[in-house]
Amino acid sequence: MSEAVTYGRYLKIDELLGLQDPREDVEHDEMLFIVIHQVYELWFKVVLHELDYCAELLANGDAPRAQHTLKRVLTILKVLVSQLDVLETMTPTQFLTFRERLESASGFQSDQFRALEFSLGRKARASVERFPEGSRARASLEARWSAPTLWDAVLKYLSAQGYQLPPEQLERDVTAPIEPSDGLQAVLVDVYRNDPRNAELCERLVDLDEGIQEWRYRHVKMVERTIGSKQGSGGSAGSAYLHTTLNRPLFPDLWEIRVRL
Image (cartoon, rainbow, N blue to C red):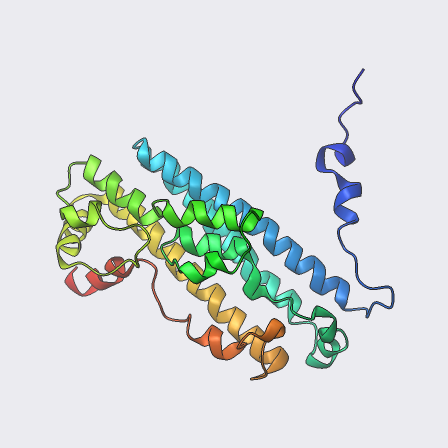
């Protein structure tokens, strides 16, 4: 007879609480640092799950549920930003008490965040090759490297709705960056002027883009507040690299059309 389902068994609480393993001579603030980053990885897993579901809903023409899914992702992004408020309660001197223990570890190595970028159209082959062949991370990124992005799912959805999109947009290389298109922008202007339901879907994508940019900005400021312009952990460039990721929209066409509405 199987054991009854309990809160602890269902959520695997014992295993979960055993995943925080600071060194024996742990500095007090290291526990906070570990838990916050583990929670980030769990939220990244949920966001990827939701974005995949959103693409599936769009493929089935279910825009209302796709919008609801995007709303959930946007709410999660607000949580991700608010977690930085908690992390910023750790002062630079408190972080320095255990920073050396990170050795080569760096948030730059988060394959799930790279997978999130890939899903939203920001792909880089170097991000795939950073992980060893045969690893879970490499397999995950290889799959998302060759898979259509959320933007591709939106374009196919609009095409199925009867909009005449430029053929090169529907047949674009899904591994390439998303580049602005005058022809596509003309279609999007038509959507905004005459199709309130699908214009609302586009606005949720703008919210998503803005939410990702907000998280990036807050992340940069948190790093600067903690280590200034020092080299990042694991030999990364720290805030200098993070600054290069700012103000780069995921869906440039949705921003470009603002001057034409």
